[in-house]
Image 1 (cartoon, rainbow, N blue to C red):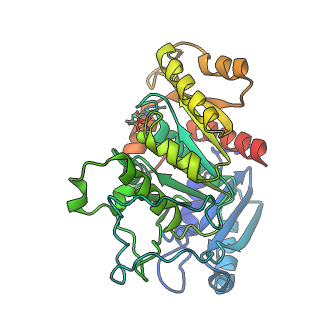
Image 2: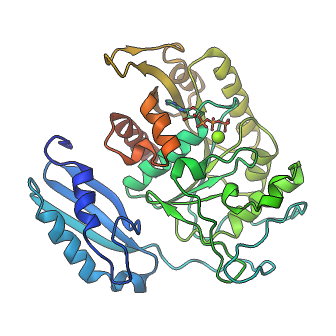
Length: 367
Ligand SMILES: Nc1ncnc2c1ncn2[C@@H]1O[C@H](COP(=O)(O)OP(=O)(O)OP(=O)(O)O)[C@@H](O)[C@H]1O
Ligand SMILES: [Mg+2]
C-alpha cells in the first residue's frame, strides 16, 4: 500500500522536475513520466519518449532521474523503465493546409466511407450516457489519467462538438500544430494524448450551426487525421444522448466497447437504459457501468450521504449481467480539479484511488 504520509507522489514529481532534458524543460514539464507508482519506499515509473531514437538519447536522463528519486528520504528502491511511444503508422493523406496549421475541419463534408479502425489504436472505447450533465466528461478525463497511471498508453477524444469540455478539464488551450498541414499533432496532458474539437475550431467556425453530416465528418477527421501513435486505448467522451455522433462512431469504427455513466437517480437510470439499449442495438459491447455522484462526502465533517439514492447503477448492472466498474463520490474537489485543468486522478486524493481501482478493473476485464 502507498504510504502517502511518508512519501508522496508530489515529492517524487518535485524531484523529477529537477531533472533537465538536453533540449530544454524537465521530465515533468515535458510530460514524459508515465505509470508512477509509489508503494512504501518502492518507486516505479516509466519515461516515455516520442520515438525510439528520442528514447535512446534519454539514457543519461534515466540515470539522473533514478539518482534524484533515490536521494529522497524514505526511498528504498527505484525502478525506471525507458520506452518510446512508437513511430506512428502512415495515414491517409487529406488536402494540405499551410505548414504548421492543423487542416481545416471539413464542415459540410460527410465522407461516406471511413476506415473501421484507427492505425496504432488497439481499442476505441466510447463513454456515453443517456442524460446530460451526469459526469461523462469528468469520468472520461479522470479514467484516462488513471489508466495512464496504470501503464496503459491512452488517448482521449472529446467528441462533444456542441460543448467541448476536455480543453478545460485537461488544462490544454494551445491550438495543435500540423507540420505537414495534414496530420494533427495532439497535445499530451497528464500522460494522456488528447484532442478536442474545441482546440481546432477557428473563431469563424464557432458560429456554424452543426448539422448531423457535419458532425460526422468532423468526428471522422478527428479519429483519422490525428497522429495518435501507439495506444492501448482511445477513450471517446461522447455528447449527451443517443444521436448522430454515437451512430457514426459505432457504425463506422470498430469499437472495443462502451462505458455508460449514470447518477443513481431513477430518472438518470431510465436514460442510462436508453443509452445501453442504443449501444446494444449498434452491436457495441458494454464494457462497464459507472455510478457517478454516488455519495456526498461532507468536506467539513466527513459524513457520507447517499443523496441521490443508494447503489442503483450497481443493481442495474447485476440485473443486466453487465460489468460494474465502480462508484464515484460527489465531491467539490472533483469539480474544482476539473475546472482547474488538473483532473483529480492526477493527484493524491482518495477519489484518485477510486479511479485507479476502476482503471485496474477495466484493464483486467479487457485484457
Ligand atoms: N463526482 C463529481 N463530483 C462533483 N462534481 C462533479 C462530479 N462529476 C461531475 N461533476 C461536475 O458536474 C458538472 C457536469 O459534469 P460533466 O461536464 O463531466 O458532465 P457531462 O455528462 O459530460 O455533461 P454533458 O452532458 O453536458 O457533456 C461539471 O461541472 C463537473 O465538474
Ligand atoms: Mg460532457
